[in-house]
Image (cartoon, rainbow, N blue to C red; front, top):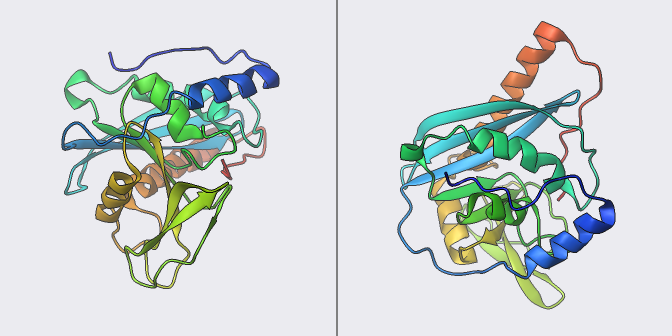
Length: 240
């Protein structure tokens, strides 16, 4: 089983902060050991206190959708800026545990950040300790850092810098639209993250790897809302 549980989630804010600092020291940027064949994209939506997780499994390099996995998990941890992974990882774990051994992904991609995080441990980085696979993030908004506007053409990119270091890339995913923000999670290079993301550009701002899981999770959300109603307002906005 490739899903691990290196820690639980019954932690105080100070404990979570310390854990992020400790885990970030174990992040490694290195070239992939083999050409990937299966890439999994993950996203989650919320309906009331339920997290609706979706993993879409794609063939690589075609980016053809192969399979999807879904899980509905009670999400009691609140949204706290800087600690998004503690809210979303329990949903991710339950979803990832449904993947059959013969479909074990080579890479996981997340709708969120990796190293683009104040403590260098966004969702994509944190998740790497639960699946022991290369991971990276594709975010819709920039959490930290600065960048020069990339060129106007699809595939153009510029580096994102924070405190003198490169932490990601602003990638033009579609002409005349804002870039998306790509960052290493763990066990992969930024160059490889960019090249994989480029192969998933198909005419939309959000690359297919994370757009399809998002669309499916929102479909599940609408279905639940129509069938059962909702007790609380949901918040899907992600900034870290």
